[in-house]
Length: 625
Image 1 (tube, rainbow, N blue to C red):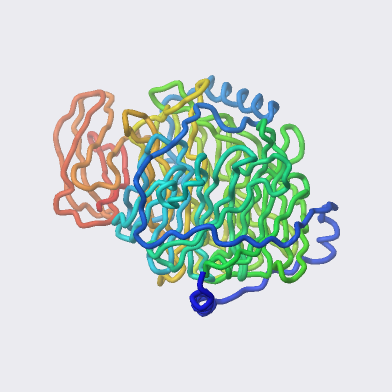
Image 2: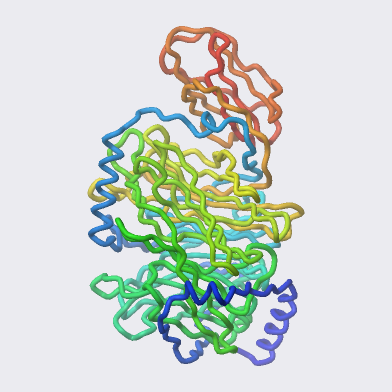
C-alpha cells in the first residue's frame, strides 16, 4: 500500500477513536491471592501479518454457493458428558407433559421487553446450524452473519447487501469451508470487527480477521489470514469468540488435533490500529492457559467506548458429580505493556440438561453443554450468560454478575418446567454505567411450541421480567438430523446501539422455518427499545397459537374449545383498552382457526383476547408492522 494513503487512513482511524476510554477494575490483593490459580501461560513472540486482501465497496464475485454438509456434529463431547445428556434426555421424554403452561400464566403482570423494528434476516441456504451473530453501528448499519453468508441491513429492515463468504472475499486460496463467523461493533473505534474460520485440518486452518473501513460495512473491509495452527503442532482452530478493548481486538478459540481431539484453548491478542487502517497487523498469542478452558469468552465494554489496557475473559468449567466453576481471566496489559494472563476460580453450581423435544417429531434439538456463551464488562462487573439445567432436565438461562474487585459472583436462573431455554446472549440495557439492567436473547422450544426466539429483561436489582416472543417458529426442525438429534441455533446474537437516545438493543436468532423443502432455521432480527407492563394471563388459560407474528397482512389464530361455546375475539392495546371486537359468534368444540387482516391497525404492540362464554381463554401479544 502507498505510504501516504496508509498514513492518511491511520490518521483518520486515530481521530475516530475519540470515544471515552475506561480503566479496568482493581482486584483486592488479598482476594486475588486466595483465588488466583497458579499456572504458567505461554506468550508467543510478537508476530507481524501483512494485509492479505481488501473487500471493496460493492464488491461481489460470481456466486458458486459452495458448501459441504455434515450430518454429524463436527466434535463430539466427552463420553461422560454424552452419557449424562442421554440420561437427562430420556428422563425428559419419559415425563412428557403434553401441553405445558406458559411462563406468563405463572408470573402474572410484570414488565416485559417491547419490540420496535422486526424483520427477516439471513435465509436458510442448506447450511446448519445458523450460528447467529450480529452487530449494529452508531450509524445504524447492521451486519448479520450465519454459518455461510453475510448480510447488511438498515434499521428499517432494508437488505443492503448479501453474499456468501467465498464471494465476499473473492480469494482463490480459500478452497476449504468458510464457517463460524462472528461479528461485533467496536464502539471505541466506530468500526466493525469480524472473524471467519477457514478449513478443518492443520494444514489449511486460517483465522480470517476482518476490519471494516468505516461504520458502514458497504464501504469495504481489510482482511488478514492468521494461522489456525499457531503452535505448529498439527492443530486447527474452532469455536471463535471475539472482543475489543481501547487499543486491541481479541480472538479466542479451541484447538483440535487432526484426528479431532481437543488440544487446548488459545487467545490471539491483536493491536487494532493497523487492522482498521489496512496496514501490518501486530499480534501475539497465548497458550497453555490454566484449566484448559473450553470456549473462552472476551468481555468487551458494555456501553459506548472501550476499557483497558488488556481485557477480561470468562469461561465455565463443570464436571458431572463434581465441582462447578466460573473462571475469570485478566489479560493485564496491551502488547506494548508487557502483559500477564492471570486466572481466578469462583465456585458456581450448574448442571447439564437433556436435549430438547419438539412438536410433531421424535427428533430432538441438541442442547450442547454448559459452556460460556456471551459476556460484557461494565462498572467493575462482568456480565455472563450460558444455559444449564433449570428443572427436570430442561434447560434454563443462567445469568451471572461477577464483581471483579471482590471476585464474587451473583447468579440467577430463568426457565419453566417443560420448556428448553437455550443459547442466550446478553447486552447492557442500563441508562447509565452504574445501571446493571440487561436484555438477554435466547431460543426456546417444547413439545407444544416450535423453535422460537425470545427476549427477557433483568433489571438493576436482578429481577426477571416475563419474556417476550420475538419470532414464533412455524415448524419443527429435523434438517440433517443424525441419530435422532438435529443441530439447534448454537448461538444467538445481540448488540447495543450505543448512541440511541435511550437504551436500545438489537438481536438475532434462528426460528423453525420450512425452506428449500427442509424443516430448518431462518434468521430473525429485532430491535428491543423498552420495557412495558404486560397483561396478566388467566390461570386456566388454554393454548392459543397466533402466526405470523409480527403481522404484515393476514393473521391466523388457532384455539381449542372443550365444547360448543359462544366466542368473542377482540384486539386490545397495551393499556388493556378494546381497539376492535373482531368476532362474536358460536364456535364448535375442538380445534378452531380464525383469520383476519390487520386492517386499520397502526404499527405497534397489541393483545388479542379470546373469550368463551365470558371466560377468558387467552391473552396473546402480537406485533403489527
